[in-house]
Image 1 (cartoon, rainbow, N blue to C red):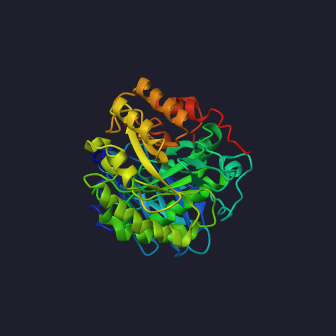
Image 2 (image 1 turned 90 degrees about the horizontal axis):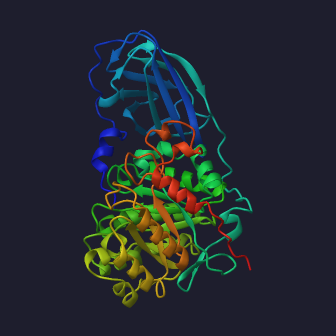
Image 3 (image 1 turned 135 degrees about the horizontal axis):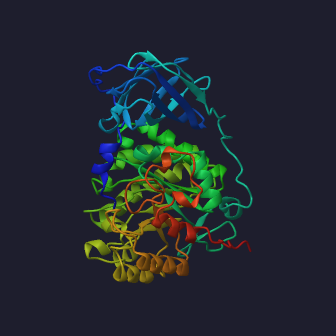
Length: 462
């Protein structure tokens, strides 16, 4: 239900091995590069690169460096076009940041993998001129299996399960998880680092971190190994902070999940085997099926669920529903098709999505009816229109959140990002910095959601 992809595409470049543009006409005469590893996990890392022009104004630029050893690889970058050959990396301006005035700078970033020692670049040049600068921020990889603090959502509730129509904790008591969803990690990876997840866990007191891994639109299909690694690292980061991690196989276009059936089997076999011993993982196997029957969605689910169960028999699995996960309401149907023909599997829930300014009384009525017969989880919702934009509808958003609280239905809000759209929780540009905690970083939607999520959970333990 997010349709602002064209705008994002103009602002974000996905890593490719395309031929770089012609050398710029104007050379730099001095430059500085500040390179910082913002997060690191086993075999992977995320880095920020700030390049500052200290010489004459530049129109068109290419930043280059080499790795100190040969074990590093750029997987995906943003705010520029990235290319790597051997240990040499080239980064060329985007259209919107091609001009660097004297003292002007560009903030770039990427995710990568490494083998051997910590990744360290050497010999930065801007248009052939050697740059000064700093290299810092290296962090040791986290404990691969940390025990979540006992006073966190995972520490209190442990391994989750479905009991009746509710999500229940290790004490077999119904609970409600409240949290936030990423935007597409191929576009907003820079928003998900130690500082931002600390803010989500400590300031927002979020129970849940949903990891939206698009399959198409520059996502998983372009780099299965890289995206699988990034998802696993975010699961680890959530676990270290005691939050549940929902792995979202974010199918949107095309709407028939069976188009991605083999990709889903491959992906979920890998992440389920890797994360089977963790207590904080929930699997969402199809984000928003659309233009397809419930029978086709059910068939897909009954082929993917056994793949997960073979590796991870205990985790909760969430199945998308017809009409962009609206229980069929957006297609003129209703919840009865799922009630009368449920997926043949146990320990599963069904997804429901809404956008408060677009989906109101008839959608709330469907959820109210379905909640007594189906285990539901609102894996995605927005406070604005289904486009992801427009004004926050506080009245409808509050009515929805009150209903979900009443029914003990968990939810993840779209989105914990600085996207230039009304649904984003962070103001544009926030992810270029390190402050995710002050009140000034939040949009109207973000402030509303934080005020709801940060209230005490009062999880039952007996």
